[in-house]
Image (tube, rainbow over all chains, first blue to last red; front, side, top):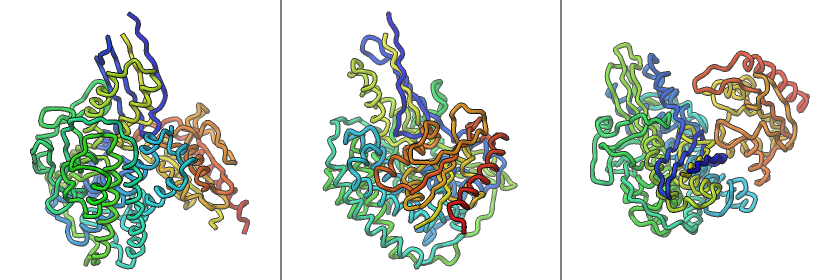
Length: 429
Length: 143
């Protein structure tokens, strides 16, 4: 029996560090392990003993692309302990901040990471050489997201204006008016983006995904909501630990999540769309229909279309919120510490992000649990890869690597929650 | 037109990868966590852009290298933050958004571990790079 181990370089457009190991015998995959790197464990240790006000700022550093998601899940978990609800204009500002992050993150993924897969380019840079106006459009759209985050959050990355109970300073109507103007233009660019990506050729693949996403009675859930599963299960966020259990697997520093006992569920754009598409803004619903999306999309490659539709929704809703914005009486509601356990979840661009904190009598963090979307999706991404690779084991390794990279990119793994240098090792019996 | 921008690239929570950010903060410059689109926005149209990043090129820790020009050497190809500095230059080139002059300082890191402090050699080099970038800025704009 001959064994060969082949290493090939870089999953270049998924950011982080990681590797893929595939073992096959007689045309069947006997083992498939995606190794990803996961920093939340370090942050959970770092937070122990810190003041209860610190997690929003500290956990924002976990991810360079989705700091707002970490801030929002952390704030809501800690505010739940303190018995504080943030609503009215302050909640609107949080929504605006989050929409800004969705625009930034989705647009970066669509234009520089994902689209090149469909147009036959090895990178967004190579694509930009031939499609300069298209990439310019993407960057202009992304910039509208940056400006929205900066207007509400104080700066475009790692917003510094967020605190428990709200903000350090609330923007005025005059601050937001020019941002709304740019968002109206961005909304047109977002609609053009939907038409553009809808025209790509998608491999005819569908998976029987079990989806998990937050749902909200009045919104396409992003900032808060009730976790729901496509099989009809719903549970309050306080019950998350009873439903989602993380376990150590030998091949990864990341924990694998199981939902109600089984691994391999999916969170993220496809899940949100499947559970909540009826709550998209009318314009975004129209864009989805014209792009040929039904009420549920199970083709992971077409997630690029769903993300584009979500960018339309984000621009559209942000404009609506700014137009109706009234300045809050105070930039934050007072939050006084008390001992207890609190849970918070929000929809990061790449899926549901759950935080749990235990605060002691002195207002210090005694325990932290962070469940990022990429860790939840890891087992399901492995299933996608298995289905992709098993019938194609005879292809050259370079081609298999390319196909694997695309399959991973479909799920937009997080900048620091996943892979930057993915080595594919294929072991043939 | 902006005359000069200073940009630090890196991640504060990854040991010596914080070097560029630290230099930028000391000089009132801009911080970049690895988003290439933001980087090209920072430097587009500038007369001079000075970018400071950590490197992992198997030099002794703390080694400072200065490169001027729009063709970056191999040590700028790797990154802990997604797309590399060299990628950002190539994207800027494809889109016609580069500074007129680009100066890149790299500081060789020893430890990029999550949550690690900057190593003493790198910390010392940060002081030196701050002085060197100050000289670049004065030479570019001697008013």
